[in-house]
Length: 229
Ligand SMILES: C[S@@+](CC[C@H](N)C(=O)[O-])C[C@H]1O[C@@H](n2cnc3c(N)ncnc32)[C@H](O)[C@@H]1O
Image (tube, rainbow, N blue to C red; front, side, top):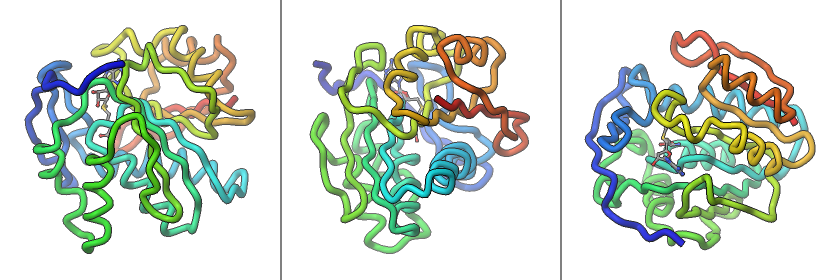
């Protein structure tokens, strides 16, 4: 099992919608679009992922696997959606190079929120690794401290947020091996969403069995991808 270690030097940037993103020295890239971190998360993962699954399947309970916990922004936005829609969510996230707590606590995602949301956001980061926690009546969280390549789970998920760094920065996470693993981790009729729309990725996703939908991307980006099992 991996241990948390300080191997992830990062610096802060303010994106065009005023929300923070981080620049990773290790991967030489930002965690989100510099055009708007919160706006991108909302468009790609919440609207085209979570809201889609919620409406499509009229589910009262949805299980989600996120690839790359990072700043916790997707988890936080998902928590907000759960509260707003009285939807039960079991959220699991895989992360190999955690953002140190000192930095996570300076992220500005809760600036427009009251005390309760601020507490929840810090809980998301403070939570122990590899242990499930009830964050609220509706939202449970389990963060896995491991490489995606080594992650396995008996449980299958309704929805995957595939939020790795891009294929040019992390080609090892956009392989047939990884997408086959994602496909197998999805329950029947499960859905995967990613901000990426690269041709090679789409061919790989098709090859492992996904039906693909190409959707308008976030913030002027031409396209993003939704894969259906
Ligand atoms: C684009 S960022 C994710 C952003 C995140 N979803 C958020 O809301 O802030 C990609 C994340 O994947 C993590 N990561 C990189 N390589 C990984 C690997 N091999 N296994 C698991 N996580 C990895 C990085 O540390 C980073 O947190």
